[in-house]
Length: 126
Image (cartoon, rainbow, N blue to C red; front, side, top):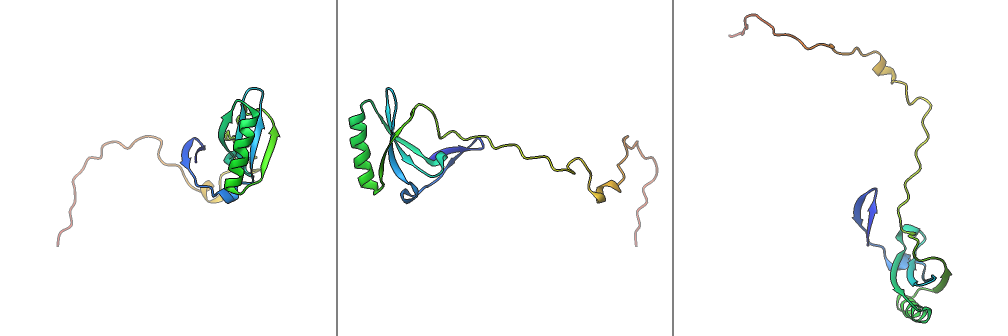
């Protein structure tokens, strides 16, 4: 399965035994078959049908093949539950603006560039 993680396309493998059920999401116009995972981001929409009877029949066949329990859920299949939610910002630490102790003793470098140095080059030879 391909999913974006922090904006980067990633492919992951999820074993079938980690899925909990095969569900039919009942919508107004479309009925969606979904493999339900504990983590909503790993749930997979398998197929969409126009009639509830065909969706229910496909769900039962898929549930029997994968040895998972069948479920029927009311909801709008047009909503995307698989969207990755942005993580909450971290709380600022109390001393985040402070410099570390060993950095406060350090002197800054020269603010102006060094000019040309004139003179003779001394080379020590044996």
